[in-house]
Each structure stands twice: as C-alpha cells, then as structure tokens.
Amino acid sequence: MGRTATIWLEPLPWLLALATYALAPQYAPLMTQIFVMILFAMSLDLLVGYTGIVTLGHAAQFGTGAYVAGILAARGWITDPTLTAVLAMLAAGTVGLLFGSLMLRTKGLAFLMLSVASGMLLYEIANKATGITGGDDGLQGVVFSPLLGLWEFDFRGTTAFFYSLLMLFLTFIFLRRVVNSPFGWSLRGIRENDLRMAAIGCQNYRRRLIAYTLASALAGLAGAVQAQCTGFVALNSLSFELSGGVLIMLILGGSGRLYGAMFGVPIYMIAQDYLAKNDPTNWFLWQGIILLILVLFARGGVLSLAERGFQACWRKVAR
Amino acid sequence: MTSTLANILFFGLAYGMILYMTSVGLSITMGLMGFVNLAHGVFAMLGGYATVTLMNSLAVPFLPALLAACILVTGLGFALERLLYRRLYGAAELDQVLFSMALIFISVAIARIFWGPLAQPIVLPHYLQGHFELAGATIPTYRLFLLIFGGAIAAALWFGFDRTLFGARVRAAVENHEMAEAVGINTDRLFALTFGLGTGLAALGGGLGAEILAISPGYPLQYIIFFLIVVAVGGLGSIKGPLYAALIIGLADTATKYLMPEVGMIFVFAFVFLLLRWRPQGIVSRRKG
Image (cartoon, rainbow over all chains, first blue to last red; front, side):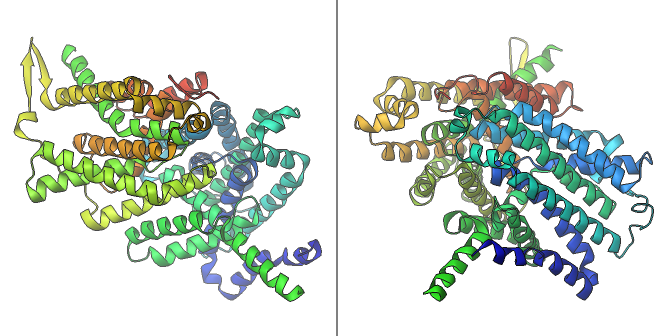
C-alpha cells in the first residue's frame, strides 16, 4: 500500500465524526467523551508506543488537568475555557516533569510501581483536600464562560462536541509533527535499543523526560476538556482504573501509530457501554478476556490485525 | 504514649510480615525470570478465599485450612506457570503487564461471581484472639503470632536460599541465567518450582493476613501498590531486601495512620519516590543494571 493510497484515507475519521453528528446529534455527549479519551490515549501513545515507556499512572496528569481547570472555574478565578485549558496543560506538564525526573532513572518493575504510586499519590491528595477538590463527592457545579465569548456550553452538547473534536484534531496534528521529527525518530531509537542510542551520543534520559513532559501536558489538556465539557470533575479522573483503562484502549487499537487510539477508544467504550450495562462484574471478565486474547493471539491490536488481513488480500489480488 | 508506641510497633511489624509473605515470591520470580507479574496479589487473594471458605463452610480449623489453601494455590500457580506464564518469558514488558492485568480482571470477576462483592469475615481461633499482659505491656496475641510465624518463614527462606543447593541454583540463575544453564542447571524446572513456591507463600500471606488485608474481590487491585513497593524498594531477586522493605512500609503506614491520619498514604508514597531516586535498584539487589 503506497503513501498516496493512505493520504486519501486521512480525512476519513474526521468526516466520520462529523457525519455521526449530522445523523445522530443525540449521541453528541457520548462522542465528546470518546474524543476526550482518544486525546488522552494519543498522549499515552507518545510514551508507550513511540518511546517504550510503559506507565500505569498516566491518569495522574489527566486528573491534574481536570482539577486545575475545574478549580479555577469553580472558584470563579478564571472561567475562560481556552485560558483554563492552557493553564491546565502547564500544570500537568509541570507535574509530569516533576514525576518524570523522579521516575525515569528507574526501569522495569520499579518504574511501573512508581508510575502507579504517582497516580495514587495525587489521588490521595485530592481525596484528603476536600476543601479544595470536594474529595469523594467530586467537584460539582463547574461553569465555564462561553467559548471565545461566543458559544456557550449548552445542554445538548453541541459546543462541547465541536470544541473537543477541534482540540483532538489540533493534538493529532501536533503529535504527528512530533513523531515524524528527528526528535520523534530518536524516541523510536530509544524504544528499540537505548544502549545503542546512548552509544551514538543521544541523551536518552533527557529525551525521555521531554517526551514524558509533553505527553503529560497533553493528558492535562484531555482532563481540562473533560472538565469543561461535563462541568464536573470526579476523583475517578486520577484513579488507577483510568490509567489501566486508557492503556487497554490504546493497546486494543494498536500502539505506536497514533491512529490506534482512534480505533481502540471507540471500540472499548462502545463495548463497555454494551457489556457493562446490566452487570459491571461482567465487564471485568470481558476486559480480562479481551486483554488475554490481545496479548496471546493478536499483538499489535485491531489496526495491526486489519493491516495483516489487508496485506494478505492485496497479495492475492496482485497475483 | 508508650501504649501507642507499642501498638504501632506490633501492628506495624505484623502488617509488615504479611506484606513480606505476600510479596517475597514476586521478588524471587521477578529476579529470576524478569517477569513483571502484577497479578501476584491474585494468589494471595485466592489463598485468603480458600482459607476462609474452608473454615466457614467446612468447619476446618484455622491452621489446617491455611495449609490446605497453601497447597491448593501452589498447585494452581504451578499449573498457570506451565500453561500461560511461560509463554511470555522474554516477551516485551508491555505484554507481560497486559497479560497480568488480564489475570487480575478475570480473577476479580470470578471472585465476585463465587463469593459476592463483600469482604469475607474471618473468625480467628480462640487461642489467637484478644491480648495478654507481659511486663506491664498489652500484647495483641494475633499480631505476636504473625510476628513469630513471619520471622520463622523469613528464617526458613533465608536458610533455603543461602544454605542449600536449591538456593544456590536459584541465586546462580538470578545472577546470570545463561551461565547457570551452561553449567547444567535446569532453569526451566527451577522457574516452575520457584513460581509455585512464591504463589504458595502469597496464599499463606493472604490467609494469615485475612484480618489485616480484608479478602474481597478488589484485593489484587487494592493492594497491588503495596506488593510492588515492597519488591521495588527491597530489590529484585533478594530475600532480605523485601523483608526490610516490608517491615519499613508496614511501620511507616501504621505510624502515619495512628499519628497523622489526615496525611494517609501520601507520606509513604513520597518516601518511596525519594528512596528510589536515591537507590533506583532498591535497598538490596542481586541484579546489576
């Protein structure tokens, strides 16, 4: 499959998103949720897929973004959506820089443990600081001023839909530039063989830290967008379950290709909606089975499967 | 004040012993096979369920129930190692993480289907209940029992690891896997044996500690961070490291709960971050680099 063939496919997901809105506007809130999670999963892809940093604490930064945006608006300090989003990104990036500098010298199990601990640390802080975060009840009644002073966040979720889609699009364009830049290729090099990268003079630790900080800032953006679109921040946004869930969503689609998030997240969330409707226990079982199949038989996720299938067909046609 | 201090000491050390028993197997298998087994807590949970079920439904006494649970879970761990885990030795870290998360999710669902969502009550035998007075101090019997039992396990493990041929083989394989194989050690069998041993110890910890770490379907997720902390702080592939780490974490967590309840786990997490910043390999590590 040549490059020209894929170029025509590129607008497809975006057109699909717009078409879904045109045909079924009642699903706008669900679509908004999906966009937020795709943004979040894409930021994780920079770490897991491109740099080879497997983290189980990415929600730490998502929640930071959500709480920073939420608290700024709830207190009435700053209610402008774009400004709070930028501040949330800065805060999450700073948190990522701090945690990253503490964590990235370790590897393997120690790193995994610290990544889990980073999420739990912030979760505990948010849980205890009830005066600021609302604790277990979450941060309720967060109202943001109209987007750019023009569009209010309405009950039908129209503004939220287009706002989250636009943020996702901008993030995608940005991340695509990053992963195709020399910096992005050095990250792939570190993923494949960090010793050799160090041997040719690459400062691995610094580059991994930059990647971690970037991914953290974007995760914070996802959190902020969620807070703005739902007007609510739950303690769950910092939880281990979310960190694990977003990793599964990414792997389900396929990591290391940015598009993985676009496929994995909707499949996961629609499956969750369908399977967990009656009994959440069921969902745990299904999640486990899906993961087991992914690891044992379908490495590389849905996109990789599709690619292999497509290539098999292509070879037959060519012959 | 002295009674608070004594309480913290007994409760913290007993808690640490439970953490040690549930985690030490993870340290060894992790050091030996480099397998990131996040699902280690599953075996502790199953040990707890087996113990409680044997006691409550079949009226088996505490210690025999514990032994039976230990044997059952060891068998299960052995089977899982042969059937599933070994397929992923040498696989990418991400695959191992996802695989063990899958096991966690499935076991959580299964536990909830069979035993319901609530924590399982455990009724300790008469001789372990209450407390007694010694030299003016009140000593909780169950905690003292845990301390002695845990100490005995640690001593036995140290002996087995440091003074027997089997232990020497394990240490050799941890140090250098290929070299150990080259001198004729059957590492494949060694893996299976140590894995079974580790799961058995986890089951023992789960059953013994059922009153401290409540047995409920969320167990493997809820306490995963503790097991990981103990292993990462203690150092991989070591017997002594996790013991120190578990006792420190047990004491620190208990002390903060008593003295500064509003701080919660924050203090412990911050401590762990700084410790690993200072010593990324843990307190004691056999593995270099």
